[in-house]
Structure formats: structure tokens, C-alpha cells
Length: 150
Image 1 (tube, rainbow, N blue to C red):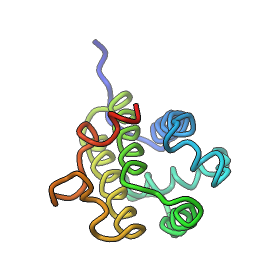
Image 2 (cartoon, rainbow, N blue to C red):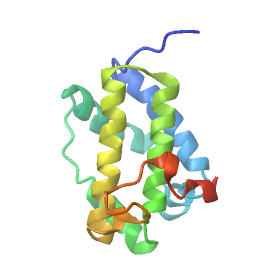
Image 3 (cartoon, rainbow, N blue to C red):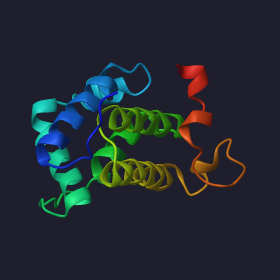
Image 4 (cartoon, helix red, strand yellow):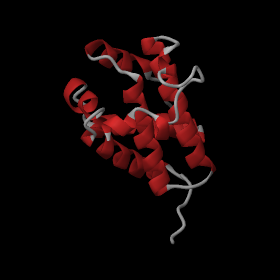
């Protein structure tokens, strides 16, 4: 069994994000948000999102964009639900776990979930993240509505 290193550089983030977006674009639940609604050009999006994650994990990049605005525009075109954010989180966690292990990888997964919960609550209201979750907040993906989606 080979050791999986922690996320250690911008290059690691580039590889991670390319793999993640490859899965996300192909996903039947969330892929249309990227491909049909937003028409995301990965080569344009990648440097921006890499800056975001580099700032989040290393505090080295300069990211001054409004990350909420594009999600609000998508939500206006087609509502983003807990299932959408749940699927995003599932794919994010699986991608990180497939490539990396360590404190930064754990921080990336936790940060991804926090972002998903915050976005969902801002878009759909403070109770949106409790769907099926007994009032405890965002439901971990393994127990989420994804069983019916997969």
C-alpha cells in the first residue's frame, strides 16, 4: 500500500481540483449546474478556485472574489438543494481521500463541508441544512439522500 501525502503545494491543489471537477462535471445530479447552467470553462475557473483553496489551506494566495454571488445566480436559475450540496461534499471528500492524507487534507474536507452548509443556508434559509437530519445541521454524506441518487 502506498502512502498518500498531505496536500503540500499549489500543484497538489491543481491536481486535486482537476480530478474533483472531472467528477463533478460528469455527475448526473450536480454536473448540469457546471456544464449547462453556468457553462463553466474549467481552464478559466481553475486558477480562481485554486487561489481560493490555496488561501484556505496555506494562507498564501490572494483571493478577493465573492464566492457567494455565482452560487446565488445558479440558485436563481435552478434551486440548489441540500442534495446538491451533499453530493458536492461527497465528491469533494472522496477526491481528497483518493489523493491525500494528513492535516491539510482533513482541513480541506472540513472546510468543504462548512462551505456547503453556509452556502445552502444563505440560499435556502437557516433550516434548509436540517433536511432529514433531526435538527442537528448538515447530514454527513454517507447517510444523506445520495443513496437514491447513486
